[in-house]
Length: 385
Image (cartoon, rainbow, N blue to C red; front, top):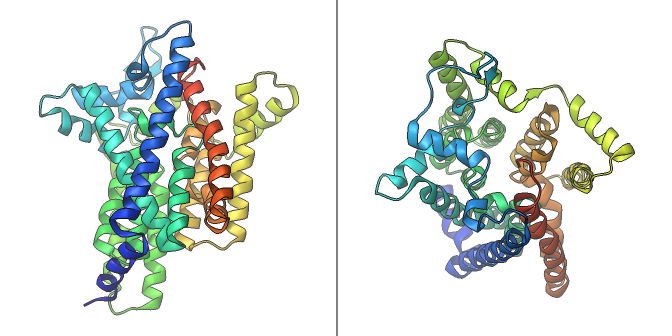
């Protein structure tokens, strides 16, 4: 029996087996119900109540549904004035393909999109609990689940967005890599890379894990190296496919810039936003976003001071560089930070070491703000996440 095979039951037992997983899913279910109640309350109080279900299907959800129902276009999209527009090619394929698969049994695509997101969220919390347990303790796993599911803009885990699928795959990949189950790590890594562009950060993290494994034991070096190679191919393959389909190698980047103003400017726009908002801003949402961006950097700094597992650190740092380094809608950045596990790690570890009453009260206070904040941005704030 291999070392990895021996480790799997130990992790399962350390995580509390079915009871431990049940607690993690229970935490998820409680947070989702609480947030839907808040969302329903805010929707009913709004000037344009459209219902909770419709709130979960706004903005980017429409793009994913277009891909799921109609497939990808074959070329650029232009408006009547001949200006280049964003189109479905900006969105990576795993989530819309899952929607299409579920809707193939006769379920409406919009309902299928929500089913996929919620099922993926359940898988996500299991993977997060196993990851927290594998890296630290069972209590750290539960704390990581609770803190992640109640983070500001964690409402996307309930929406027809790809974050739940992506984080489930990334967390699962990290668990597999930490336990040296390389076939699973490679498969989950390439699927994550085909779910969101930040899957590139997860692939690099897997490469780091593979190099660490090779340094420890060269006898089976091909397994981790193959897993890393497969994952690293994901994002370039999709970008190359878009370029081939449109006939322009830079097509994906042009579509992103035209539709969403997304371009890597080495953080210049983020610094400008922070400086302007904190000096002259008078809107509470922009100010809250600025505070979240600063707090996330501080949390990552604390996490790095604790010397986390290198692949997790690499994933978190690269993902944060991608979020802070690109231009685009500032109010989308808190959502893009949701899957960055590195920023949640210090709080999860602290909660796992605190007295249970202190941990519960602290996470409840965090949840009260985070669940309301996400619901507010969906029901009241007029702009896309």
